[in-house]
Length: 456
Image 1 (cartoon, rainbow, N blue to C red):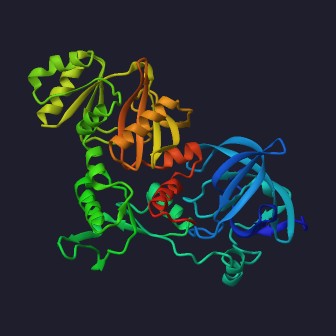
Image 2: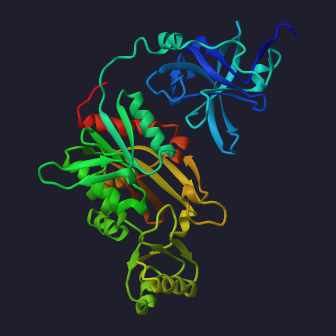
Image 3: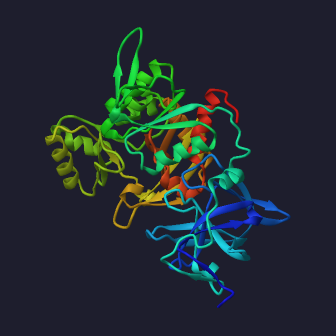
């Protein structure tokens, strides 16, 4: 009893074998497993054994300090988070040092950016060695700002990075936070610009973009547009203005506009030799019968041209249902596509993430039971998938045809081979980074660096 370390609900500890001199931990006896923040996780072989490389930013909300770690891989485990999300994680063993004592513990590696602490100390690591006073905090003391500076910032280079803006609507969105974090980690000055707070001056001599409060935004090197569908028109107008100011846009306004026009983008893709499911488009309810026949009869998919994230997509299982849905949409004067239903896909599709002409990650999305749409926003689940050379080729060709630097390309596996469903110009990062453990936000920043021939 006397030998046990008494700790509060939050304490500082260290991992000497990983080269982490100090890190703030949440002490949580309700959690069985301990977890450490890790990004850029990569397995590798060392002396015929499985090892893991990963990076950690030991200080919360600060991506400038980074430690490169290596550890022997102990296991891979499915861990259920407090929010109920199941995730497959790598497990390592390492030495924990706390309150002047040290012992070996098991730790799972996961991206904890959305959490308040870089480290979670679970009960397995504490068992027999620690007593928790849940009302107290930092019973073992805290490092001073000077000490943290000495640990983490003494060798941070003062090299000036690029000034990059993320043009979007929600600063709390995972994708936007990750892009800003990835840019800061690579030494750039990152800014979140809420597109609703931007307004512009159209002028041949001195065009400008202003921000809430009258601030002029004319000195950015690059802009990453992340425009939600409802803001396409204004978001593209702003992106076009940035481009007029010679700011490099990771996705240009013209490319985003055409990617949002489902019909035009399908025509563009077909003209570039990319196969799609047989699709019909009409404006008169009188032709409903022939329209249904055109795509091979029922069951078929009816899509609203302006839909996104699986919204405005209906599966009509019978001819009668198809007629009802088509006529209902048309009575609203909505533009619709009808598309053959690929039954053999079995509610699964592929999302290939393309950055700068390369497929950097791929996942399979599977629809929730009783649902045919595999979108993650519709309750679909994501898993890692090995894509074929042909599927990669289609994704790259489609992205080039749309003139996009960054795209989420959705492909479905059919009996005729892979078919392209959609090209998304603002693809979300959470599902695919979670499933593949790849630093896709970092790849987006690298694409900007390449444009400027900027080297770290």
